[in-house]
Every structure is written in structure tokens, then in C-alpha cells.
Amino acid sequence: MGLTAAELGAPQRREGERSEPSRSGGASNSGGALGAGPLDSVPDPEVTAKPARRRFTADYKRSVVDQADACQDAGAIGALLRREGLYSSHLSTWRRQVRQGELAALTPKKRGRKTTVSPLVEENRKLVAANARLTKRLENAELIIDVQKKLAALLGRPIPDTKIDEGNE
Image 1 (cartoon, rainbow, N blue to C red):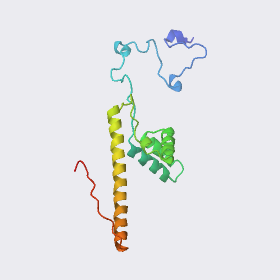
Image 2: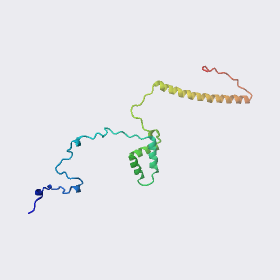
Image 3: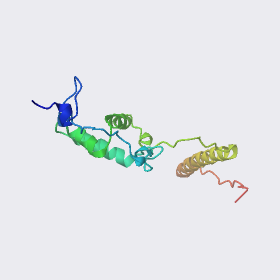
């Protein structure tokens, strides 16, 4: 007369259940519920509420693009991306920006509202640029006039010097 599994106190199996928990990769849950402890229901306080967005400097981007262009072996670019913690989309975007010559695009773009320029500041910039352009034209005209005076003196027909009244000097 043999004793049955129920009489020996062994756990009973349902149909379709595995008898060895080690094969399924997990420990058997004999009688207790998972997470029954009081600390299991409290969330981890170390989790950040919102992850910080990564920002890459222009030098770093150029460095990664140069390293990727220097890769010769099969799988070397993938190893570079894994080592640096980057996605292939980063590399393709940075390569496109370099190819288009967008040096300013390799620097991080300033996010947020654009600054407005005062109309007086804008007018001042225009006037300073116009002043510099006219000063350059005046210097060229004075050079041409000096050459004309020297040529006239060589030909024996000197041009008389006329004083121009400059109001502020």
C-alpha cells in the first residue's frame, strides 16, 4: 500500500502545470503572495520625475562624426555608437548637417522665445554700417584725386588745392 502525494504533503499539480520550477526560470510560489511585504508597495524615491534632455556640444558632435568617418572595420561604427551611448539617428543627423555646411547647426539651438531687438538698436546698426561703407568710398575717392593731381603735375597742368571746410574737425 503506497501513500498518495496528498497524503505525503507534497504540493498537488494541476493539469498543464510544470512540476519543476527550476525549468521555468522562476522560484515556486508555495503558499505566499508576491509583494506581500509593507515596503513593496512604496515607490522608489530615487526615480527622477522627468529625465533631463541630453545636450551635445559642437566639438563633441564633430569628434563623433570624424571618428565614425575614420572607422574601417565592419561593426566599428556600431561599437562607437554603443561606447558613446548614441543612436544611429544622431550620427546621420550630424553627418547631414556637416554635409550641408551648417556650422551653426552643430551648436545647440537656443530653445524658447526669441529675443526682440529694439528699433533704435536696429537703426543704430544700419547707420553704423552705412557710415563704414561711406568712409571706405571717401578713402577711395581721395586716393583717386591724389593720383589725378600727381598726373596733372607731371603733365605740367597742376590742379590747385582747395580746402574743404569740415565742420566737426
